[in-house]
Image 1 (tube, rainbow, N blue to C red):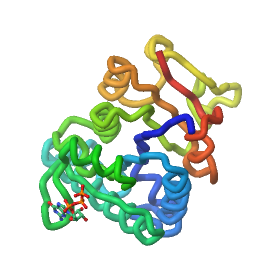
Image 2: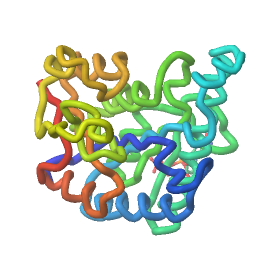
Image 3: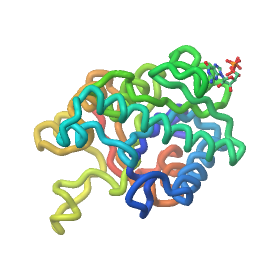
Image 4: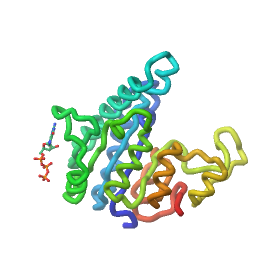
Amino acid sequence: MKYKRILLKLSGEALMGNKGFGIDQERLMEYAQEIKTVYNAGCQVAIVIGGGNIFRGIQAEKGGMDRVHGDYMGMLATVINSMAIQSALEGLGVHTRLQSAIKMEQICEPYIRRKAVRHLEKGRVVIFGAGTGNPYFTTDTAATLRAIEIEANVILKGTRVDGIYTADPEKDKTATKYETISFDEVYSKGLEVMDMTAFTLCKENNLPIIVFDMNKKGNLKNLVEGEKIGTLVEM
Ligand code: GTP
């Protein structure tokens, strides 16, 4: 196995499947199955999931809501998605722990780095909810921060596209995919991989990012085993 400890970042929108809002149970179960295969292979898995299928702070701001207020609502949305993933995984017999950056002790544990690492070592999938617990940060930043804190080998960004392209492949048919690309090239070419805060945090801490298609069955397992899938961003 190439990666012993991973942080898997999933978008909230991905959980919608073909629905316009909320959680598609079928998609949720597919993701849980994919995660189970790497878990069964002995990989230590941490997960951060967004909340955009339920609430987006930035859009609420455009509608007149206070940004900070909206961001907190978004953080709560990530906890709902985290609970859904937790339940789906447990249904498949995968041991999990959910930790939240905002205390909600009736629902989950508070985020404690050393406990999170212990859970991973004991073979539990750890899900981090409520982002970083602070407004003005994205779940990509939360994922990066947690990945660095738990010393994950890599951050795996599961998306709808199978990597980073020279241009938007949905708009430009001549766009080609990078197999690997350096952090500096991403900056200089102005490519969008993550928001700048998250991306810079990865670079400064030498944390590689792999962008890959989470909707393709077997991708996650093959990636963890070292197959070249998606695009690898590294020094
Ligand atoms: P180890 O002692 O390292 O094996 O970890 P553990 O998670 O099994 O021990 P712990 O006694 O901390 O947790 C037992 C169960 O209670 C687990 O399902 C935890 O997720 C849960 N739990 C622990 N702390 C909290 C909390 O603050 N709130 C909630 N809701 N659950 C908690």
